[in-house]
Image (cartoon, rainbow, N blue to C red; front, side, top):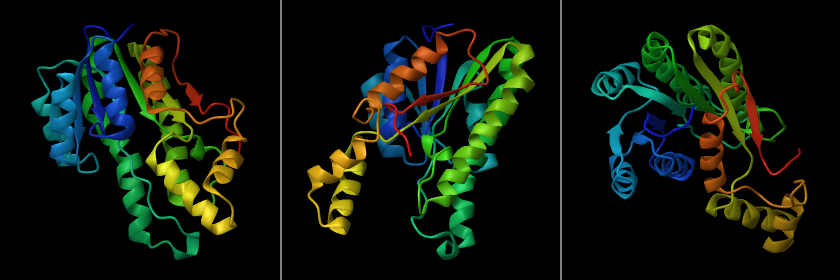
Length: 249
């Protein structure tokens, strides 16, 4: 199947990867609904793409159920669970329980709740696609980021198991694991690393991208294109697609 003519819901669609995924799906002919916690960025993305904006906290069961009710007439057949937060950057003993719980509430619970709300209709129709946005950080060491890494590994476990639950009904569930993405967030990291090591920002960047087979990071647009490509691969189910330019730990 392709994206054309289908309705796609993208959580965390107001900025970053979510906005890029929404743009790629809209460009591929899908009717797009972007959901997230902040109304203003959602409206901006929706206005630019001709999409529908819906405010929703994916960690709140009542909010997700209300979103599903508002979209009952949309026949959502593509669900992209992109909403996520980075969480604290600290050694594990210094991470407070509420900080850990907040990361899992959005990254894992939010994915579960969206699947719980939108999968039954897909199963009843005998068709549908779920793409869960995980991360290469769920599979490779990332010091001082245990909540984030653990949550993304949980998303991978959810994906592989759920694929076998709903696959017989014709619904495909896959994960996309992006690596570091070009942008201001990574540039800030390079500045911090340069300060820490007494090197230049260019040197810090070169050392980092030297760990990738392609010698670069990926772009947000490539993540959006990957989601569209995954939808066009009918035999893809229970997969974890690594999109990292060959980045190694």
